[in-house]
Length: 227
Image (cartoon, rainbow, N blue to C red):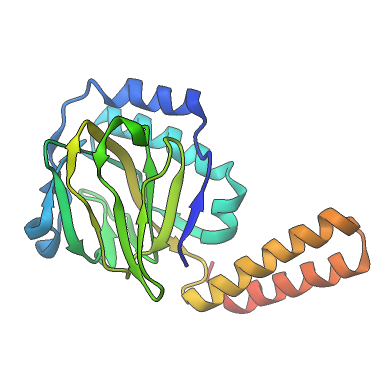
């Protein structure tokens, strides 16, 4: 399931993150690459253990916790601390698949990467190229979203970032271990959650239909979730 999540950060939130990261010291993006990615990646990245990356990542995590569409779609158990990258002057990231397990260096923190996320931090009109191209069962999906918007997609997908030929593409990226490991089950729960919200909005949360649908959702979540 590929889903765009609007307004994870509002304009003020984007500006706050950019104020932190724009003047920081950036390094070769391959600092966190696996073998396959290192052959494909050409970009810059903030060192993940830098104070700036931690502070900016905390802002992103706070925004995610207040984004109900993200919570409904991802059902997050663990979120890898957000990282930050930028592409300019022809930088690109060729087709690759994200590593199944992401381990934070120097710690015992690790996540199973069920989902990958990219939070765009630059206005799409400020750079050319830089589309995130994700291959799924419906073919290639080309994603280039407004600043503050995020795309969530299966980490098992083959994906790439097209070369940036003008301006600078800036984004945060991270991985999510979901409480529900199976992608098909996660999709069912998401669609059911959206139906619950629709029925409750029209009939009220106390309506018997809303109560039954809500109960069905939680019973399925109880059956499928790992907590």
